[in-house]
Length: 148
Image (tube, rainbow, N blue to C red):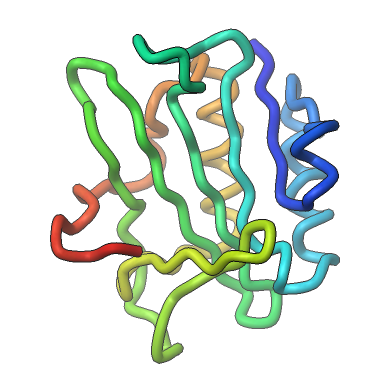
């Protein structure tokens, strides 16, 4: 299985291709070395869309290199896991958990910060499972009253 990812504006036209674990490591290492303005990546399985033709599932991966933490969100339509979820982590020391994607901030729940290595494992699992929601982290439904 292959996937495409992006966290910089140029990735909209030329996404990063992911097919092996080393690609995941390169993606995360690139994000760690980049500015916080490029701290959220989208990941989509190549060739998979929902009924409306929109890429699905979607995995969002935020990385705070300064804090050494990361967050994950998963949106999909599989019968077992339809909806939007975030990976449960530790409660943040920051006032707000947010990351930037192409000039826009995206908030995450306060208890969504994970070790970066846990996010590496989860993204590799997402890739190996053809876009299934990773089981290496614990998931919570995205709060209905939280816009993010």
